[in-house]
Image (tube, rainbow, N blue to C red; front, side, top):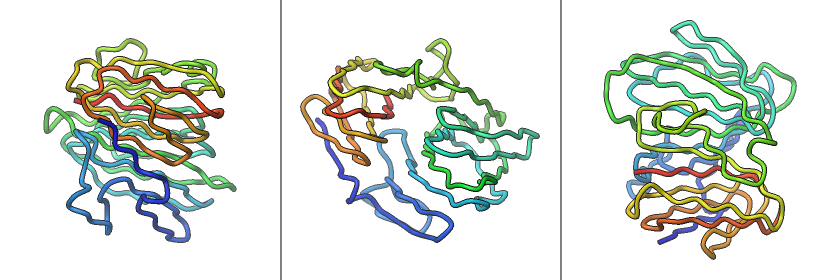
Length: 232
């Protein structure tokens, strides 16, 4: 089963310094019928204006994944980590028993990022942070795993039985992935371009919520960038 949601049907808010699409209930957007999908609790598509951002704020018991599309995002947290996330880079922050962090755009141009929150298997973990660059060449023409539950080599690790893939497909190229079992869930978001997934059509900004489809065949109908989650 594939449920597609068009870009225009996402919740949108313009706070001046932040323009955001929230795919699930978040902050002052509340819809009891749209709280999560499997263990995916948050999927935010954000544009942060220059010299703005999120000041120090707390998290706990959540696996937080940040993927920068354009621009540069600065990170600082209460356990001493500091750094910048640039296009193609993926950051994982396991909030565990509690962490504070700040995310800011210190540059002179907007930063476009995706932030995903996945519920962990265990509560009270030790807070943890890691980051890695994944190049356009690495994700070109295929689904590249970048985050996993520790069972996929060369990926960042979260405390959940989930895998996150990114891909860059040229028009006409296809990529196929088999989920871990027939009763898994998958979540596909088209960052740029257009694709079909098992025959369903998605354009830029569209999402697909997938259940009980053991194999996904994704074909780019125009040059495309996408992110895919394999979820329990």
